[in-house]
Length: 392
Image (cartoon, rainbow, N blue to C red; front, side, top):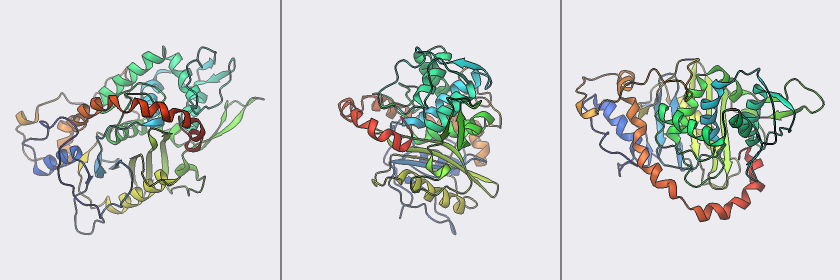
């Protein structure tokens, strides 16, 4: 059974792990940088289930407490879960009722094998239609169109990287706005959890992330058709039972990334967020069933579990796009100079949580050279499987 893992070194910066704040806070900080399963045993708290994913994280969204985690700063390709960062960046910039006629230029550059929403050239769509295409179908055509409206593909990638920086997502390197396998593109379970947490604080993001079905375009007409969300845990499909209380967020798949998932669920007034990356069991629905197991465990453990780390929390309606500052983020203070007395977990994070995500940065940079040759060999196979998991 999984238990506290021995510290065998962080993925990145290690001089941020020492501090003079409370022992519990210091322990929590160090644990998110460690490899292996991180969990603090307590009486009457079950141990987390054994899952095959390379990296995962369970967070209580009310206070940002990380209840258990594994290798959360490990740099891995994110597939379409990176579209959560795309949405955080671009969603605040356009009114949902704005109308845009899709052009040939908007759809240029879409990689073969990418998932598509089914947008048609010269057809007008509301911006809300485009977001339905992003969230429900992982449509690269919708991402390319919105990126074109945002000033272009390269500008949007730069904007996304800036949003990641503002959020403290130090493990993320953006090379393709739609999550398509691209050498050097990585994120982490920690960073994807940040994106999910921040996104669900935005009513528009939360709406699209929880939508099960939508007409495209929503105004109907002879070209309209129904999109169904490809998140099997949300809608129940392909042999997966829908999860009671699930409220989104985003699934993904590529041959290089494997299956990835950010999922949030609410039960009895408590909301949990699980991020899970690349299950190794080989099961067709492993990403959904392992997420189900972690959610079930989280709801059972949350009332009594000790935190192994914390995520920032965002007030409902708080915008976090690159064009807007994250007002709650404190100015960084070196921990060895802080000299503060013992605090609660929440008080400690308010002052020092910015550092929790920093440790993965070095690892992310090192991962930039991940298997370009392997990526090229696998790229051909992606087209046949991308539709199965509803991602790029």
